[in-house]
Amino acid sequence: MSRKTNPVVQSTKKEKDNNKSALVKFLEKDDCTSVRIVKIPNIHRAVSISVDNEGLNFACLQIKPTCGLTSLPELSPSSITKHMASLLETATQDDILHDVIFKVSVIKRNTVN
Image 1 (cartoon, rainbow, N blue to C red):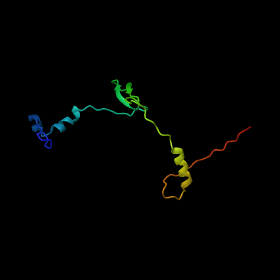
Image 2: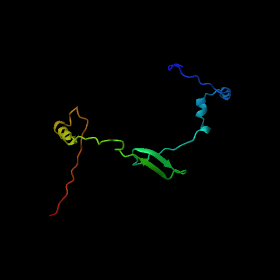
Image 3: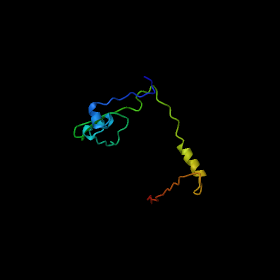
Image 4: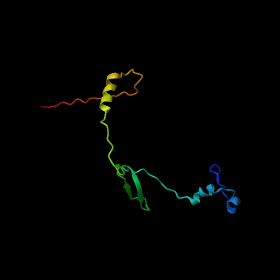
């Protein structure tokens, strides 16, 4: 069989009688199970989750971010401070190159000595 040709799907007599393909039969509501999916906060890198029948209790297996690494990657020092200082020095409110305007409020507090 060539890779370019798709295999011929043969329908059963019942499917021919109902004039439905196997895919439509698979997607009928009576044959499907409804599942409600909810995002669980603070779950990262989950590899397996189990839940009880009522859906009230769950257990989650999480993988360490360094699992499978033979050595830890070297991180370059952060340069965001230098980049923000450069943005502050070069940008103006009427500048068409920059899309960011920072509004910073200063709260003055009275200090008693």
